Amino acid sequence: MSSLRLHVWSITGTLIAFLVSLWINQEVFAYTSFVRGVNWIYLPSGVRLLGTLLLGFDGAIGLLLAGLITDFLYWFPHDPVRAIAGAFLGSLAPYLVYRLALEYYDLRASLSNLTPKRLLVLAVAYSIANPLFHHVWFALTGATKNWFDSFFTMFVGDLTGALIMLYAMKGILALLPKQPGKSRLSNRMFSIQAALDSAYTNQLAKG
Image (tube, rainbow, N blue to C red; front, side, top):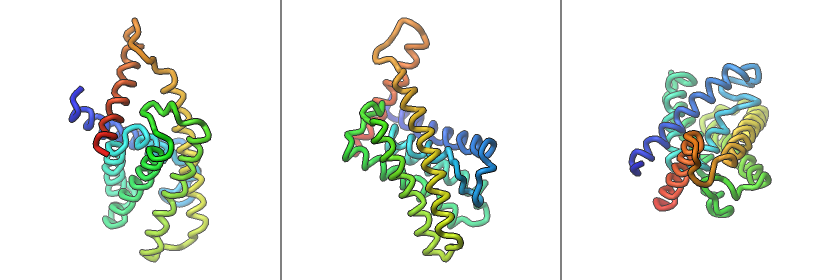
């Protein structure tokens, strides 16, 4: 697969995964909503963190586009400034955690060297950074009602969503074959692993 096609697929896949996770969250966990857009369980946060850990900058771009689509069409259709800020902040926090993982954990595409403890550290770091960035923005714009309750709810929602997605994906990646097999299924699974490795290598080369 060419480099350009791989970038396009990485960005598109992240965008679709985010939109699907948001739909599932709204259908399954709507009762956990604290205020509009803030839930006690928020699966899209897991896609945000996982997308950047696996795909780096491509994942961040996919998240930014997904954030712009959902903010403009669903969350804040009449507030373009809030929509743009929310999309940018929602993609910035996981990307910074991805850079942290590169720096301190020698991150690999398969997440094979991320132990359960390291996954927890990254999930907590993201779950603090994301609501912190948003609430700094809220403070700057004067929207500071129920600041602590909102921050705590967003932290818990981001953490639960991130942990669910991270541990689930790490388990799936652990099942991927390390070399091509005889069956069509194993070959496809190996292709997935190879694509992730290629995307990750491209991100390192760009960095």
